[in-house]
Image (cartoon, rainbow, N blue to C red; front, side, top):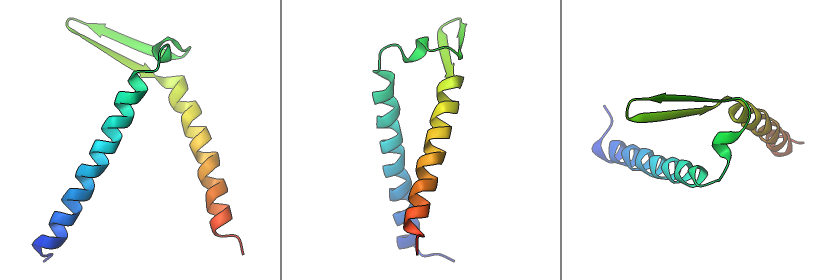
Length: 78
């Protein structure tokens, strides 16, 4: 059974990660025109609006895949 120090450390890491992700989402919401890109799905209901930037997510996924593969190759280069 893990001790309380180990559990506390993981809770702090999870909290810090949530703060960083929340700040990134907040900063990305400040970029003008991000919700106007082609391939963006917008769902509007009574009292709420939800925006799904599908094309932007696909492009971001491809870019991050390429970048992480390059970094992994550079790290594992012998």
